[in-house]
Length: 506
Image 1 (cartoon, rainbow, N blue to C red):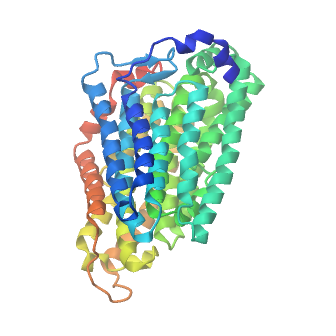
Image 2: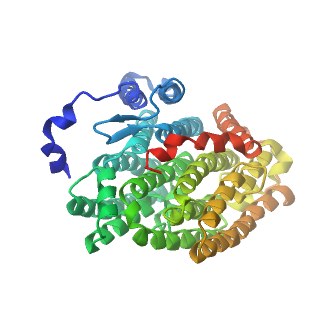
Image 3: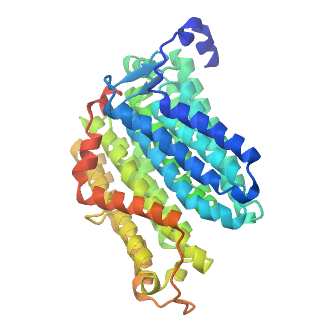
């Protein structure tokens, strides 16, 4: 693949760079170096400034995202001969990644300070991972997709093992790293087959070759390997085995980051590959994704029912939610479902991120007092911290899909996409999803019953002292969940953009 790029010679160095379009990436690059440089000279007592600086960097990168969406004359900005594209689809996802990164910074500040973790290095890793996610949203070439995926993944491996003196954190990092490297190898193997059989690394050219010519055996293998590689990143069953142990062992802010941002970036890469490069191979990927979606939501929910630890419960919940996100992708080539499926995935990622981050922020606040994440430790939460209890109720109700809280509209859109596609397979998948929605309600309600009806386990009804940054994170997530649930037209109109699907030839 690298050879194909070098062979194009001067094509890659022609001045077709749009600096305004690249502004979010440039701000992050400058921010990474700034955080790293200042950390070298900053006194230990002033390390708290690293979190504030990182937050400003993320907010600074958010500004050009807004200006590009509001001021930009050209809705589609292509660079490097359409290999890097900034359109409304990319801008929506970049905004999501930057917002998630900012919320994680708010959740991490107190945690890092109180436990004596290295703050400067942590925030450099976080910014580097967000940089990979932002790049993923605009990548339209096999090389840039893979580079973006590794850029977001490698820092995450180290962040998962950030509690260096905790054996469980070390185990989490090693498991995540080993399985991640294995998945990257499979993904790269599939990409090399795509390049070898089509002669190009550009996704649109690969898609054209697969659409106009009969699919060969090597291309079938390539499509399967690419989906398997991304299946690990989104923790789809049976590639989910790393998720529960990694989520439980990693620091809670990192767990929240992996369950939302890393998962979303994996879905963005998968969606980009499906719509641009592999759209013509629907006979291969549609049944495969159908099976993955059904297994992911079912296995994730069934295993979540058995959990006694809140973090592991949310880990399996995250697995099952991935199945609902996969569901519309199983019908993208059926009828006119392609555009609706893309909107469903984007809407689901946006609202799920807010609800899941909020749930983890509450868990972080409660574990600061109880010292454990066991579900029983949440007993009587409403009696001594009603604010946190109400917020946790809000986020769990949203994850269940109960109106009028955020995620209900995302699930409704996903069901609508599948049902509109029609056919026996689509209806069967909708039935599986409906049954799993009921199953998921069971374990979410178990947590709510613990909070509302059970007594405080140790009798300590002292209110939880929640740091201001965590309250800020909770506020952002709560407002987003409530507003998008009550006024779903905002997010539906936000996703109903011509270039959202136009970039994929929708």
